[in-house]
Amino acid sequence: MGVPQVVIVGRPNVGKSSLFNWLVGRRIAIVDPTSGVTRDRVTHLLEIDGRFVELVDTGGMGTDDADQLAEHIKRQIEQAIDSAAVILFVVDAQQGPLPLDDEVARRLRYVNVPVIVAANKADTGVLGSQTSEFYRFGRKVLAVSTRANRGRDELMAAVAEKLPAPTETNGAPGEPTMKVAIVGRRNTGKSTFINTLVEAERMIVSEVPGTTRDSVDVQFELDGKAFLAIDTPGIRRRKSVSTDLDFYSTHRAERSIRRADVVLLFFDAAQRISKVDKQLSDYIAREYKPCIFVVNKWDLLADSMPTEKWVRYLRDTFRTMWYVPIAFITGRTGRNIKALLNHAQMLFKQARSRIPTAKLNKLVRAALEYNPPPLYHHRRPKIYYATQVAGQPPTIVLFCNEPRALSAQYQRYLLSVFRDRLDFGEVPIKLYLRKRLPSDTRDEVDAELQVEQ
Image 1 (tube, rainbow, N blue to C red):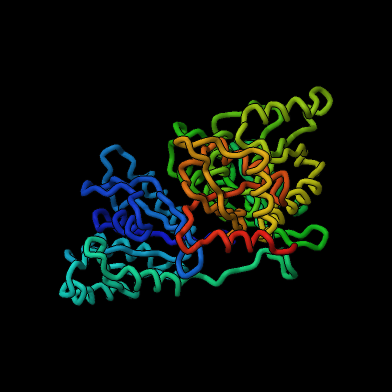
Image 2: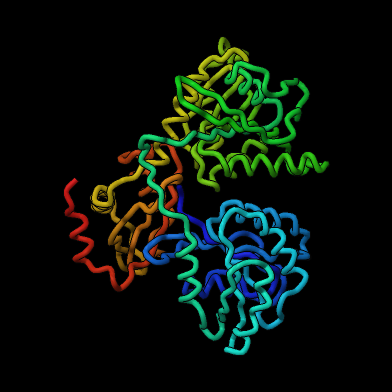
């Protein structure tokens, strides 16, 4: 399980971004009285009661966006809600419940995660006592004020209480069923591949592009191990999305990627890589999902083109995903399918691996000695301490004296070291830089580094 996400939602202008900045302790999200300023999700790593969470700010639900981005904002909010461990439903204590608040409450009625109503702008005790009318939403209500700095500790305590219990991801007995999403543009053989997996006509297979309109879960077993395959609709270029069916096909395919443990991105061996393929790979990377590039229908080219040529083609096209493994299969005959699933299992195991803190810190120290970070304002940046806080994806936090001093290039160097020396060779790694707190002493760090393996 990855770092749990605490998602802030609500109608426009209730102070969601102010609440986000207030909880984080510094100004990150844009705060402006203009409706719809926050469009994309904004995230920040936050420590609550000894546990790390990702705090997520979202746009206003029901925004009438002047730049015609209302649908984009809505999708960002839906994605945040889907991934939430706890939801903070922000309302305005001064205005009281409004019709848009009721709409938000209806949207949250059927979510399966805890929802806390944060009645913001309760700048005085009188306003705080008037928040009882929000209890009609059927949720716990806390009166807070970002301006008067009231109720922060109570809100943080309520979030900590609602967080899911930490789970181990060491691949112990009772390992969960691996969910594999099969994605790609239209007519790359995804449904044929699933039919071959289950040895039955579970999917409608057709040469007409776009036959699969919805994501479908198919359970099957291989060598006594259970799998869940998620067949997804073929994706069209965004400017070609002309019907509601096309729009929802894209939406459901993206949701399937978020649900999956491993994503198989399908290519047609006889077709060139398209813009749709690049959009899908970007989305997979943004969601930090383990992925395999699957070149399907390889029987059509096996005698005329060496695999090395397609490998170079993929590596040159997806330079930031150089660590992603590549498989060549024929879905119709089942060629190399078993090897593909075995490799997917390896990625699943890698993503769930946990590295002891002492081992991780020794590796970080060796990486710093071999290649120190470049000077920043005439001073050498320092990394004091590293720890893995979650799996799926592997999430590593580096405590340093100045997070801005470590350039993106140096962060890529550290990520390459982690992939080369740890169990994360073929999966995405989420890296956070955090300024060391005053309570983190050098003695504590040195003691941690000296722990025996």
